Image (spheres, one colour):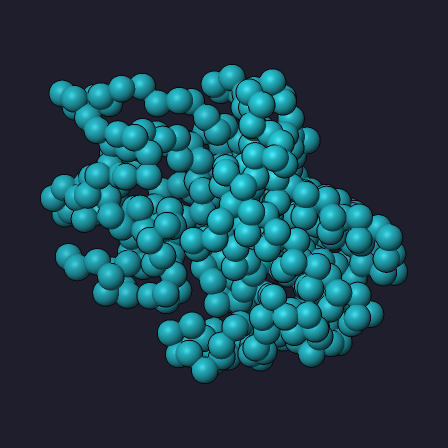
Length: 358
């Protein structure tokens, strides 16, 4: 049956983007539950990208099998998806590099079209779980507004002041990325509904932090890398003066939520789940994150971050985005790490990998 949940004995799970930060933790989580994982990577001959995955075969109880695939090549995923009961699509190449805004928008559709074609070709897949983004949810709202899964970017058009338009895509990267994520998410739901042989769900992560599995997960644009920079005493540079509200979720919780989407019986096509803080304790302004890091790591001499004045934030921070992973906890039964555990595990992993020195 189309909505029947999957279990390890039903066949392999295919995971795209398997060597990435989130994808790698999805692979690990599935293997720990006994699944055979078809891990899709662009180049399985690169030790820096795949050794941390193949090493999981030593502990089991599941196993990982590597497949080479390219999101921009039609049919590239056909062999990887063959006999699979579910696909977790965590792979993405656009939005992280130096593409133009138009290339970001167009590329999202091309990538997802190719993956969907291979899903349909396989005929055995019952669940398709898509890694979307909170960018598909967030839109202009007053400070303190709590976003839920009912929200979509593009809501409250007046708040965009004329910027929410396809005519603005070539010149506005943020609009291009958000519009692409939202529209491809809807495209996937429609494809699943029209095909009728599988259901599609989406995970929408916010600020993902947590332990790294390999050195390659220390990407310069990532939230975890920002924490490393802070631990090195450097100012937080993504926003003016370092001012930001971090709405944090553990990468291990994000991974588990993907698997639970494939396994949970009481959800259907077009179910979507924000992965963000479990409660207000996980929502931290940069200066609050600095304080927490000082408490957890008292031996670090200087914790960088927000611009301060006499021990207080130099200027106020815009109080957004507020959001909680309540629906994932209620419908998927997701149990989450505390923010203290997540912050500690993030920095500890940098020490363990030799990317930070005590």
